[in-house]
Structures are given as C-alpha cells and as structure tokens.
Image (cartoon, rainbow over all chains, first blue to last red; front, side, top):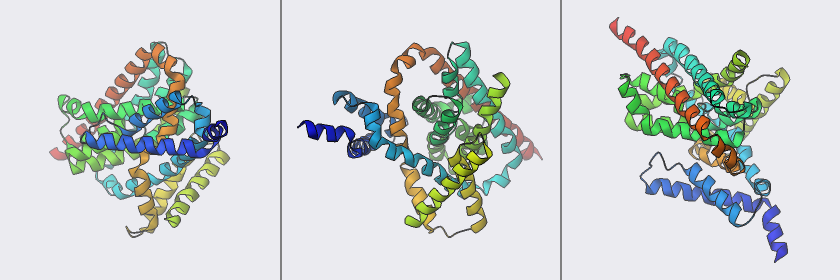
Length: 235
Length: 116
C-alpha cells in the first residue's frame, strides 16, 4: 500500500493525469455556462489541482514532477502564437502608424501604472515585477516575470484576471469613453486583456476580433521591452 | 504533426540560444515566436501545412499549459491575502489606464483619417 502511494507521489503520471483531468472538467464547466468569461478553465483547474494536492497531502514540488512536463510545453505554445499573428499580419498595413504609436504607449502605461500603484500601496519588488507584465498574453507574461524577478505562479493568475476584466467590462468601458471605431475597440481590448479579451472582441464583431488578436501579439512583444525600460526609469 | 513540432521546438531552441548569447531581456520563446513569424511571412506556406495544424491545436488548449504554474499560487495565499489592496488596485488601475490610452490614441488617428 505504502509503495503504491510512494509511486503516486513521485511518478510523473499522477501530476500529468491530475492536470489533464482538472483541465477537462474546467472546459466542461465553461461549456455548461455557455462560455461565460468568468468560467475560465484554467482557474477552475487550478482550484481543483489545489484541492486534490491538499486532500491527498501531496507537495507542490512532487506534483511538478508531472506538472513540469506540461509547463515545459508553454514555451512551444508561445512560439505557436506566431501563427495567428501571421494570419492577421495583413491588417498591419491598414493602421500601421496608429498601432505603432498606441501599442507601445499602452504597454508602457500598463507596466508603469502596475509597478507604481503596487509600490504606492506597499507591495515589494517581487510583487511589482509580478504586476508589471500582466497585460501580455499569459505564457509571455510568465516568461517576463521569471526573468524580471516576479512570481510566475501569481502572474498567471493576475493575467487571467486582467483578461476576465476585459471580457466582462471592456466593451462597456470603451462605449463609456466614446471609442466607437471597431478597429480601435479591438486594439484596445487586445492590448489589455490578451486572448480572453480577444475572444470577447470576436464575439462582438469579426474586425474587432482580428485587431484584438493582432494587438495581443504585438503588446506581448512590446511588453518584453517595456518592463526592463520602466524598471530602468523608476528603479 | 511531427513536422510541426520540429518547427516549434526548432524556433524555441534558436530563440533560447539567441537570448542567452546576446544576453537579451526578451524571453527565448518570444524570440522563437518572432523567428517563426518572419519565416512564415517569407515562406507563404499553404494553410494545410503541418506547422499550422499543430499550432492551432496547441493554442486551442493554451490554458492547459498555465495550470502547473497557476497551481503554485497556493504557496502564496498569505501574500495575496496580506497584499489584497495593492494587487486588486494594481490590476484594475493599470488595466483601465492602458485601455483608455490605446482606445483614445487609435480613435484620434481613425477620426482624422476618416475626415480626410
């Protein structure tokens, strides 16, 4: 019996299976809610994994023997983001100058407000570096946090929350501030709420979705440069 | 399937090597993404190419890949609890500020372009 339990704790099979099953349940729940933006499979799955680890008294490090196999693929999935960017690239010419101005400025505002607000309210350096990249799409935000001294586990959650904000409140805020152009709305949503905002934008209008997707990819790229720049400026 | 994975891993590897050799602040996989993007723009492969099918499949389940990192949050629950105010304010304020800035800048340009 003990031998079997030891096997469960130390073999990658358990962590791998737990992650996949939790994800399947998360996807099921999202479907059952009619794809509600608050029912993000990753958050449901994270809660289920946490619950299972607590109930079975498994350490996070032991879970990661299997979990790291999935975590490893995050890098390849990041590379794969080139494909939607490639498909949307023809839109680049359409609004080249506005995008070349708005997206870097947006990333700079997001990173500096993130760092400064957390600092003013008493967050330490690690928490500031965790907040800084949260507008980038999650895999890239995690990678930036890792290299800037943030907490990768927290940035995953912060980023998802920023995405959900966009899906739930983004269109309303844009209407309130009188941004009506579909392309402007898409670019704004994609730049602060990445993939989750993009799927909401797609739901509103095809053009809005296309620009949101493009904006998400470009914002992620620019955020990689904005984080070290802002850190240099505000130390 | 295999061919597509070779593309993704190849770009990732080159990206990691470039980031390390040149000591860039940009993460390796992001350089890999740029590399793949430039290659795809140059090659103009058919939509049926393996690299597209594999990428689409991975991106459909993108959230799966954040779960192991996300599950680490349970080690930081006390930090989240004691810093709830800076965390929530930080997310909401920076999200709102950037949304407004991007929306307004692009609208200003498109209004001028439309007026012409």
